Image (tube, rainbow, N blue to C red; front, side, top):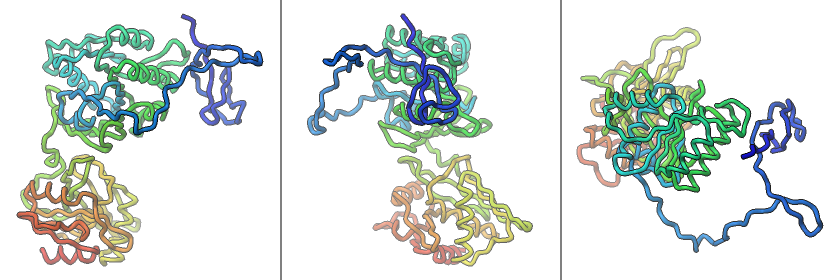
Length: 459
């Protein structure tokens, strides 16, 4: 089979060139030409005698009302936390991209999942490009899967992988990793932008055409983002990120994109000698084990996808120098500076000459503004040296005018806290429950001053 001609395409204007140039000949953009393989076009003559590319027949055009909207069939992996993030399981013909730091557990989790699918009667294939078959077998035995029947293909050439997929027609295929796969149609090295983009595009087309569910393992950059072209994330159906400290036993998988389920859903795992195990009560990870309440600690209820989680916010306020520091771990640093200004202006709590450190326990990252009220109460508690009451929670967004704004799904947050034994809550007035929650005293406030007043009354 003759190779397709290699061309270079401009990322800025889409122009092409037969050879690489420092500047695009069409738009004059520098370093914008990327190698790609051109598709061989069939040619013919129109009625004027000129040569033109023949067009493939288009699909039938139908109004949406006439298109049958059938639900997607899902194949549960047998790992509840992974199925939660995927939206219920693997979808036929779906493409999943999973990334994370080296050694965090991507290959371990996928080997456990593909083994469970194989045992359930699914036809699977594990393509390994970073390890030999013997290394995968060694990991399998270490995970307590000595009799695993998962077929393993140590291969990095795209054409051979596609041939194997066509011959075996697996239901689920794992490509570990996409950065190691290369195509003969391109001259660049494996892992380059052109190779990653073209190989992922071919594998995605294969998944849609054959119905095989494909999982691509991706490397990440030093900043933690998926390596390779940004188009890679647009190409696939689901993007999952592995989070967590490699020195900790706990791991989080977060869905950043999911065409078949909820985004920002998380799965929580614990790393054990036998691999990753799902954590049924993840709130326990993010709560410290204080025997008695301590100053500077406030528990909030955050939402991760559809799951309410209790997270402890810790604050430490200490005497600073002429340039006090503001440091936050797991929370937005700029938002911390804004909350300190609101705290001073509307609640009379001054921290201008104090170092302020804020931390979300357990390594969780909180991006929603519903953490504002808990952060401000934790800072005030540390500054006053008085602990908040035992069994106390708070959540709510705080505006620049000092108002306490509602948080989404406030009822679900309160019910989760009550289920875990919390008895006192300060929440936005708009989130006040219509009916009393058994065993919980709820204080609904409209402004940050009211919240501080309620805390002083509870002392």
